[in-house]
Length: 329
Image 1 (cartoon, rainbow, N blue to C red):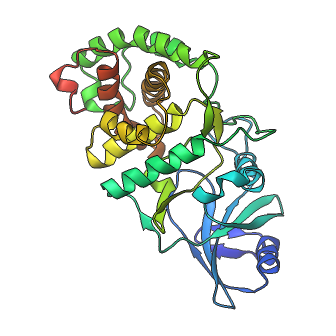
Image 2: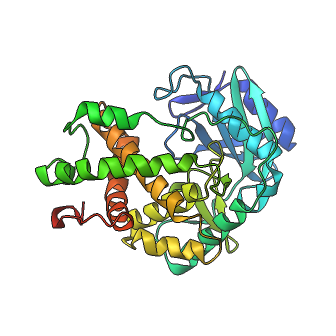
């Protein structure tokens, strides 16, 4: 019989592999909450007193990526742990991967005692900024798997935004007024042109974690540790630095451009075209996904929460006047 954790169940063979790999029987399983994926994360207590984290995935479809399974995305993260060894200073210790009954698993260091974020104080901001700068200095690993969530390369949301027109969907109330639509329609051509600059071959590229949110960051022994490595890409470092700064504003109120300056204290500037291009990407991406409506999932709530910081930084970066009604969107 499979070991049950809430509504999920591990195949017995996966737990047996974990015990064999760790050299001790699993005596307790505790499900850990959080995350925005279909992966199951549990803390395993072992007979010898040790604790490890088992992150696993069942071969189930990803609703937002037709034709993909959660194991496809998780296999990419396993590849990162097994091949991207230079990133070890910024991630949990890995004790090996598992595979049984179509499921995949990773045995990881238990960082239960690490500090979680927010709050974002100066110590946390500088630790993450330094960690990102270190990660961005790494060389591109040979045979990096393709980007499965399709964040790199031309997107078609500009066309969809124009075709839909003034459709609200799940856009926040402040982004459904006449003032908003006038501003957005003025911003749209600027954003599309800026986004195209991300394809320039002369832009400096680097290794990006590509999902630097507070739920994926811990502070441990004075350093930042990143979780969820399945979305790693090779692209402008602005992919990480801009998204991270937007998240800090979302959770702390500190303006994202000022947070970004803290990253620049540790790393070369990725270039204004890169920063503007990434801001344009997020503006188009968030509005497109929110307009699409459907079920108001946790992902949709997150997109709505990020939209205000994106609007404010975009307006500043493009010298586009921001109506007072949108200043606190």
